[in-house]
Structures are given as C-alpha cells and as structure tokens.
Image (cartoon, rainbow, N blue to C red; front, top):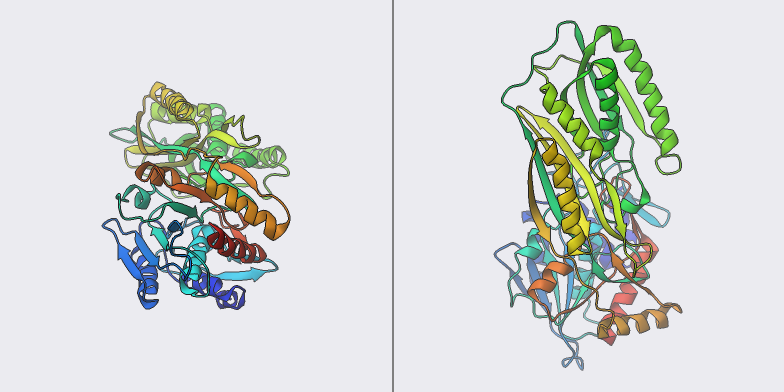
Length: 484
C-alpha cells in the first residue's frame, strides 16, 4: 500500500515522495506537479517563481550567521519515465504509482517508481521546510521535462538562478560524487513508402511477441550487457524472412529514447506449410537467447500466435533494407573512458522501432563524454541507414558536463563525507546525461557536484530506492550545506 511509505524516516522526505507518487508526471505532463512544488514554496512563505518554460525556483534566506556564504542551488527534475510490465494495467496520464516497502527498498507494483528524480525533489523540499538547518542563501530549482529532451534545462535564462554552487540531486550511487557526465543526441530515422504491398494468398498471419527483458536506463545500465528487444526481434525476423518466406506487416519495439527496450511485437505473414516449422524456430530462438544472456536476463520470452490478417505488408525492398540496417546498427557500449576506468565513454541505444501506414520510424539515443566521438558515432549510424535508403535526422543534442576535479566544493564535500562515514567518497563521471552540462553552458562560472542515494534500475519497472541510503544522503546533504 503506497501510504505506508509515509511512515519512513526522514518523514518529511517520504511524505513529499508519497505525494509525488500520487501525481501523474510523465514527461510532457507537468502542470499538476509544477503546481505542487510552487504551492509548497508559497505555503512556506518563501520567494517562489515560475519561468516561461515552466521551471520552478524557491528561494530560502540564509540561517543566522551564514548570510555571507556563497548562495547554493539544489536542483532536481520533476518528470519521470513511464514504463510498465506488459501485464500491468496502468495509465501514467492519470493513475498514481503504487509504491510499497520491501525490506530496505521502496518499489512499485509493475511500473517505474519515479524515484528518478522524485527522491531528489523530496530532498530539496525537506531542506526548504526545515528552519533548524544551518546554511547560506539557498534556492531549489525544479526543472521540467528532463527525461525527453531536457526541455526545462534548455529553457533556463541567465539571471533566473542566483546560486554560485549547484548541488544536483539526480545521481543514483551513494558514496559517489559526480563531477561530469556524457552529452547526447537523438538520431531520428524514417523509411517512407507510398503504398503497402498486397497480402499473398494462402499465407497465415502470426503475431510475434518478445518480452520479459529487464531493460533499464540507457545511460546507467548500458554497460550491463542487457538484451535489447529490438535487436533480438530483428535478428529473428532476418532468419524467418530469408529461410521461411515470411513477410513483415508491422513492428513495434521500445517506447522511450532513454530506456533499453524490453518488449517488441511484430506481425508477419508466412506460407501455411511453414507454420509448424515456425513454432519450432520460436522455441529454438527463445532457448538460444536465454543461453546467450544467462546470468544477465532472467526470463526472456519469445512467443508466436495466429492473429487477424493485416491490411497490407511492408514492401519487400523496405522490409529487407530495414532488417539489414537494424542488424548492422551499433547498439550498446562503443568506447570506455581511460581516465575513469570502468566508465562508459560512448554508447548508443536502439530504443524505438515503430511502423504505421507508409512509414517506419527508428529512434536511437547516442551518448558520449567526447564531442568528437559523439559525432563519429552519429556519423557511423547515419551511414548504415543512409545505405539502406532511409532519411536520417539529428535532434535533441545536449552537451556533456566537463569535469572540474579542482572544485573547492568537491574538496569540502569529500572532507564532509569522510568525517561522517570514515571513508573517502569516489569521484566519478557518469555516462547518463545530467542537466548539469546544459546549465553549465548558461552559467559557466557555477561550481557543480551531483550526488544521491542508492537507486537501482531506473527507467524500468524494477526501479527501486534504498530507504537507509536516502536517510544517509539527507544527513550528508545537511552537513554539506553547513560546511560549504
């Protein structure tokens, strides 16, 4: 029962997080959640503003004796990634998230939890509400629509933020202080055709469904080697098109550019005489995929069933070009960082493939800490699809956040963490995209650090956040504000 999370400590954080779980807030649906944080600021009697983009900032005066400290901005984003398991009936546009406690973890029933970045929002709101804390001039910036395009950060204007130091609360590893992140760009690909091909007499329509994959955040989890539903589906399609005379009628795989696709469904037509062979091949490929991803994926499922006949087929030349391009397209980790061992430098996520009348769309998110390598990755993917006759466009580009290992705030936070917990925090660079790089471009003199509690598997229905880690992270945040 979701309300049970309100009994957790610190109470102010979990009370706010519970309220956020009750507000539908997928990217693009920000009105209710921005009103919520705006109203909190006003109810606390604090200076509260909303900019023309929809971002909200709440300013709190310094505690007595701390008036001469540098002003600090706490930053978190308000939207969440809407992902659910295939058997779950949940409408993210209107249904609350059903959160529950499982030992030291808060989870959701079959959907994303929204701890990314609801916990960051809740940490900031708790600081704003507690007048016993010691800190200098303080403000909390709540940005909108981060998960798709980082629209809130891009919409910020000079002068809206007053802080000289920014503490971004959108990281997911306790004990790590992040000082940089990758940039990224969307690759939008389209195969267009005027008219679908006619059905072939005697062929049978079959629905193929690939499911049970873990998915996850295409920045945070890309190095784990998890299966990509689109890549697995097209690998199977290539075989049955070539060996069994199958034809593609429709395809839909993945739903979010920054989530590793967990499911894909295709409708095909194939000769009736090959149906029994298809059932055998489906079982063989399911076993093969499970063997290949043993220890990584727990329950890969590939099923086939007779379905209603489609109205038409994808033209054969488009079908073949699409399948070959998807098969050839880079996916997953591309390069690793030398200066931060174990950290991904460049990657691509073949996130969405979707057909409609006369159109097949493919969407890929490329990430890199290096602008030159990002451009090389974009060019490589572009070449594959241009050779296949597709139209390729780029969009949604954002800069990476360049590390500053000499940051005075970093040194203070390292000392604070070490004093609290008896060990030094790790200084790291994140492959996932943070808003810090965009904000750094608008406020180049701002000193930035990102941190947060232990949060696993964001952007997937397995998303979960550690209760004890939230408590420690809040303790660390309070002491950091006192010391910087």
